[in-house]
Length: 165
Image (cartoon, rainbow, N blue to C red; front, side):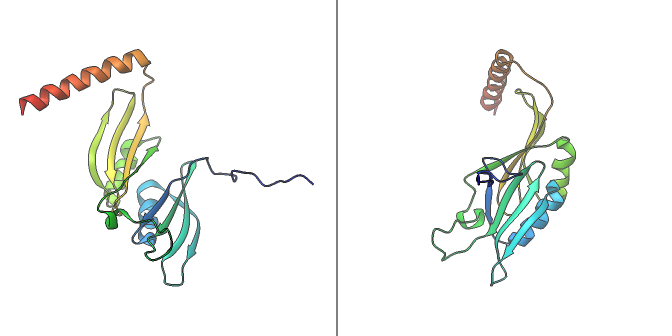
């Protein structure tokens, strides 16, 4: 009888972010309000913390758990580290709406939305749990030569601005 188990489970992609936070229940609530996340499953630990949860945002899954100090190989939350070492890039259909929704839910704006040289309307936020989120809607297909030209123009403009201050 052939093995019918899929190496990558149905509904998952090859890469799945796993976020460690302080207060996973609050983070799940935030991700639902900010990004329209749908909870797939949750495993509560005996201490009331969340040992593992899975959420769907758009067509992707993210995994979330409370920080568990003292467990072998435990990962640390951004609050414990004093910053995050990674970020999540989230493409959405209407970035202005989702960005503002996330800010209303408690995210901090790190970079306001703007149309970028590579063809995305893009902005960056930090969620209340310390994770960095880049939000974008692709608004223009830009040929590689044009993208390079635009990048050089933006870098020159940034250098001028830096020298003027």
